[in-house]
Length: 460
Image (cartoon, rainbow, N blue to C red; front, side, top):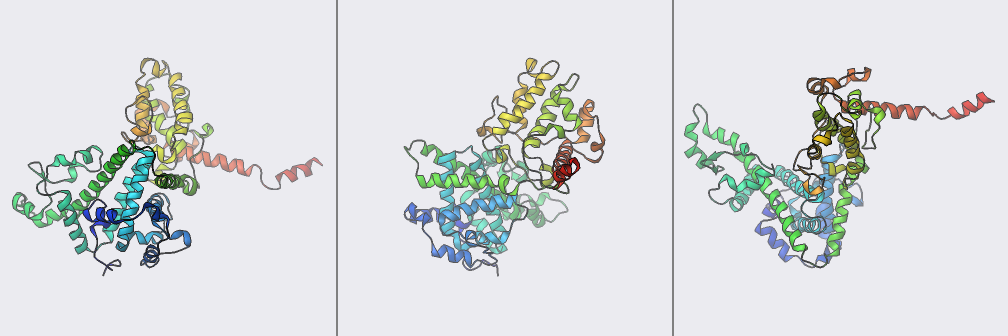
């Protein structure tokens, strides 16, 4: 028996856009009640199996709290290496469905009216919903999961479906065409159809096993997850458009939106970036003294070949990551620049000026004969092919990570002038972290306690 098998799984627990979920919303009372302490919710939370109640703040006392805990769960799960699953065990408890659906819609509407569809908050909301659905599906019994998959798919994808229905999912890279099995342009999910129409083509292979391998529950779950994520994204856009015609948004929603932003800003302030043997390395103003020789060469201005690649492909990723996310390779977590620089202040005031100055020192100056390279710099930081860096364009391209030392040697050999530190590292960013840590240690130990009194004693 599954630990949450107290009641049958409501489709709304997985799909907040189901008819069941919309009925829950219609039956909900006054919006002001989201602040009121809810004994039923508290009881469900405190009695959830495996729930760890470390203090009162661990318990959502009302629906506003629950909405924020949904976001807090995702941010901590993503960023905190010491994340405690048991503090949020109630989020996997199917009995909170009614409260959870209201919390979902509160979050979506708050984020929509305050920030709009192209904001960091909207993107994280979509990601959080996808991850929560995935986690909840993982807690279900196999029989329950298959029933839920069948029910949701019958409403999301009724009958034969052309692959073109996934145009938005494909363009946003939520799903890949290679994830799908197609027959004459139709997406194949039904096992009987697969066996009848494709099974005979599989020579020397068991068609049933091939169905399970190529489609099975895994692809069905992926499609449902991505489609609901896309529906969440679309709904944010719809609410935002409607809100533009309103005179004043509900202050309750604005307050919730501000608290969401506070949660999203926690990783930098609370968790920082945990290093390995060299210790904790947080995002901080650049220290050029810690730069590796290759970076210093580019900053002085390229006087020979490789000017464009040195600025665009090498320097731009290095400077942006060194300033904002130096521990990217240790953490192995994908972020966007706005996750660590929400207002893009560091980008505008520190990162771009340094890169542009290096480009100006080149012979000839890079932008003098190739002004379009400014667009490529923006693109390598994840903001698409645009002349200005704006949050609404973030995610159109990938924030490139710095080249490894091997790639530098291969593509930009003139930059490789190794010193003794270079011998033990494999990436210029690793060099920066090591030297930065060394410099901080030297600074901290140069004024040890008692040193001043020893000096006074010598002078006497």
